[in-house]
Length: 321
Ligand code: 13P
Ligand code: SF4
Image (cartoon, rainbow, N blue to C red; front, side, top):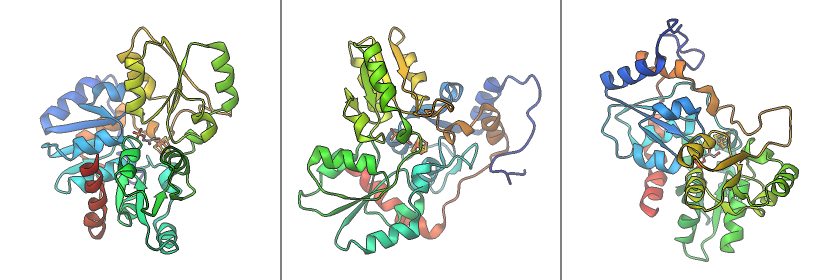
């Protein structure tokens, strides 16, 4: 089957009940569908597991299924493949990259590490397998603080690639980790002006901010955390309204878990685009998911020479958190 475009380029029959067919194929093949909270709602609804990047990595490491379909972005599927080398890991569209991972090419990161001898290298999970292979410990937004806190206070640390998450950890722990200068194009664009306006319009609203956002937004937050942490905060809070500064896909699960509460997505600073959508995450569709299950393509591969080196820091993360 032709996957030159990065996904199975085959027509889906008109009138097909896609959801029913996906469920049928999944059962027939003994496959498991995992979806990140930033996926389209219809994909989250059909998944066996939904979660943040930490939960998806944890679950992948324990699965029995022979086929894993990872509906998220490429580095998430790659992480699952590294943790489950004997399984077939499929991703509905291999073009689902990540601007943050792209901001940290492995060769440049290797030079950066060379320039800072004696430093422990901590990398955010939003990186390629090649960057993970250069890393001592991988972290996600859900456990970064805990992992850094577990290291001796005088340990010298390089943190990459997200400067905003790194800056947040430095500010919370008093550390001076050396930061790689990378960022996510979605989280960098949330509008401070709109947040100030929305806070005035909704004085009782709690502000939920992902740590990939800029510090000036973070400072206005009632809760800073991973997608799972923001969800947990919203579900347990007494507040009725929330302003949400992270990718819009999370609103689907927030509204499902908290039907009586109102979630207001914070717009980006460019009103002409849907800046709180991650264009990579939204490349996955039900049609592509159907074709992926039907043809068992496209498959995610990791270069054999990277497998062990990339696995070590991910396993270390799972042990520490
Ligand atoms: P989480 O670690 O919260 O799942 O976030 C992943 C991500 O890509 C954020 O943009
Ligand atoms: Fe990467 Fe940003 Fe998309 Fe998350 S939201 S997958 S960090 S581009």
